[in-house]
Image (cartoon, rainbow, N blue to C red; front, side):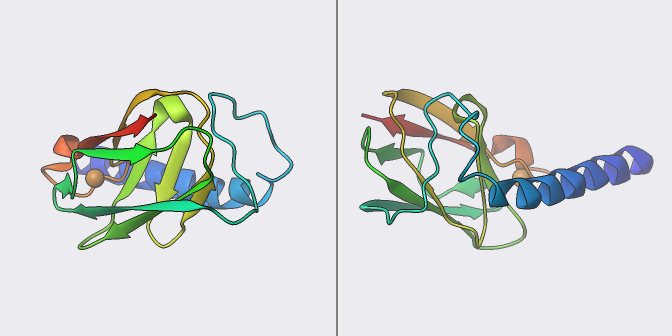
Length: 129
Ligand SMILES: [Cu+2]
């Protein structure tokens, strides 16, 4: 069991390193699809997602369709992030991202960092409308 934990921790670390490297080339890489578009331009809206053990501060966060929106993730304790697989979007704490979501809908997201026993309960939603 300890070995498994260590392995999953190393996997998370590797993913973080990859994500850090990948974000540099995101300006020229438009192959992410699924409506997420990261731009270097200033956002005209913003949301803050506060993560703590073991919940996000709101069950639902709303984003306007087509509006460049800065998403900030704040960790109030420990290490958390948010990952919305259907949006191909991950936001790490301390690294706000500007996204433009063009497809209306509800997108579930979760904490993707193994932060403790309640980790699997860290689920919330982004509604694009
Ligand atoms: Cu977690």
